[in-house]
Length: 109
Image (cartoon, rainbow, N blue to C red; front, side, top):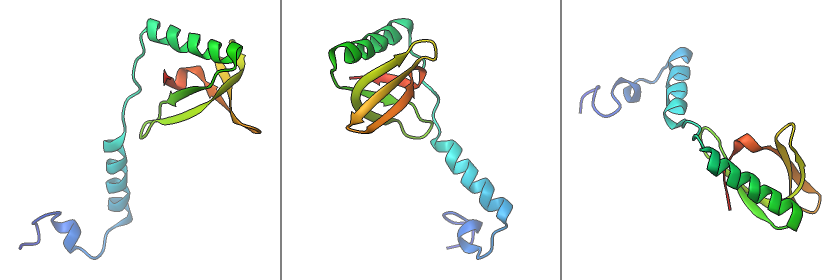
């Protein structure tokens, strides 16, 4: 096995400059990053309709929120809608709630 096999020089080197380490970490993060999906107007309308139904019928919904690295899901009831700011207040349990921008929602169930 030579010095350049596998991960090459990085594995065999005991010392690494901070700039090299930062570059490696930044590159690894960028490789895992994903782009925000583009929702068509009909999909957005369905999401907004489901949010309104949750608000008016006090029905729980699960919203999937976009994140560059890993999407998150929250389940709760919409208790407030700010149409001007395009935000909802989602109540997950007694005393636990979160403001969510509608544009962060990529799907709803």
